[in-house]
Image 1 (cartoon, helix red, strand yellow):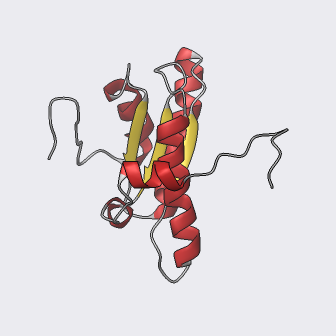
Image 2 (cartoon, helix red, strand yellow):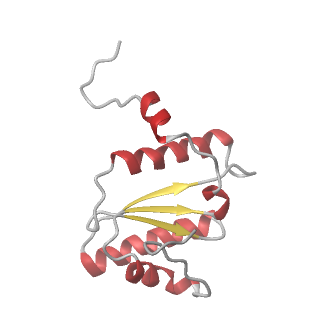
Length: 132
């Protein structure tokens, strides 16, 4: 469901995707960039990040959300999913430092762990920590 805080644009040529994203998502801290295939989604995120930096000086963090297929193993897709979930939970994303999530329609339909369950099972290791 697309609500007032969400927009879907269709019929935009790929060379204008980054410009449309920058215009439409201005002021948001998390952007979901959807394309028909993974290569296009990653290019979309890279071009959007570069244009955003040039226009506003923002420093975006890009993450890729993949789905398992012939080119991507289940393990790699699961790692990407957990990486995106961790970035959403722990990132200090702001409009000046947004999180860009490059994805495909199939990757958006994947089942994800419940937020409480993943928070309870997560282990955060930082430089200097001692682990038994």
